[in-house]
Length: 368
Image (cartoon, rainbow, N blue to C red; front, side, top):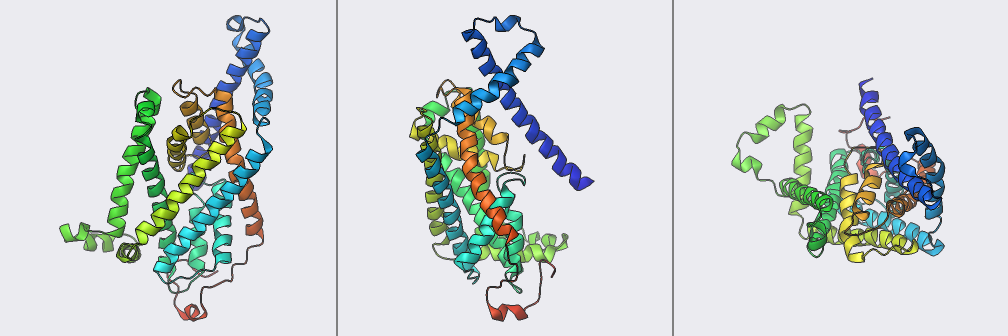
C-alpha cells in the first residue's frame, strides 16, 4: 500500500497537470472560435464554456499537430535515435573505467529497455533503475561497479545538460532575465547547476573525509554502509581516470545539441518562428526540470513548461502550437520507447561480459 501510494499520488499529479494545461488551452481555443462566430463568450454559463472547450479544443489541437511537415517529423525520430546512440557511446566509456567491456549490441539492448521504462516511470530518467538492474546482471564480481556506471552516466548527462543550459542563458540573458516567468525558471536551472556541480566534484574528487576524520566511520554505521563505501570508492575511480570527465562531457554536449536540433526541426515543421538561439536555452532547461521525479515520464511538467516558456510575450508562440511542439517531441521519444518495449519482450537475460567473471561472488542483486 505504501508503494502504491507513492506511485499513485505522482500519477495523480501527472493527470492533474495534463488536465489543467489541456483544459486551459481548450478554453482559449473555444473562446477564439466563439468570437469568430460572434458569440459573447463572457456571458456563456461556465458549464457551457467547458462543454465548448472540450468539443472544439481537441479538434483544434489535432489540426495543429497534423500541420507538421512529414519530413520534419521523420527527421525528429531519427534525431531521437541519435541521442540514444550517443547515450550508449557515453555509457560504454563509463563502463570501461571499471574494465567492463559491454558489447555494442548488449549495451544498445539495455539502453532501449531503459528507454522503454522511462516512458512510464517517474521523471524522464526512471528507466535508470532497470538499466542498473540489468547492468548488475552482466557481471558476477563487479555488481556494485556496474550499478555505479549507470549512476555516473546519469550524473554526467544531467551535469552536461545543466551546463549547456547555463552557458546558453548568457546569450539569451536579455530575453530570459527580463521576464518574470522565464527568469524564475532560469534561476532554478542555475541553482540546479550549482548543486549538481557540487555533487559531481564530491563524487569524482571527494575531500570530505580529509576535512572530517569521522566521515568514513559514520558511513560504515549506516544501513548497507559497506556497500555505500564501496560505491563511493568506485565513483572515485572516474575522477582518477585521465581525461574521463572531458571526453564524456564532450559526448554529452553533442547529445545536448542534437536534442535542441530535434525541437528546432519540429518548430520549423510547424511553421513556428522561434529563434534557434532561444530554443538552445529553453529546450535543455525544460529537459532538466522534467527529469525530476515528479510525474511519470515527466508528463504534464514538460507540457506546462513548453507552454509557459514559449507562450511568454517575449517569445510569442500561441499556447496550442507550443503544446503541439511538446507532444510531437514526445512522440519521437514514445516511438523509440515502443521499440524498447519490443526489445524487452525479446530480451535474453543470460548474457555476461566475460567468462572469467562467472566464478566471482554475487554482491548486489540476488540470483534469480
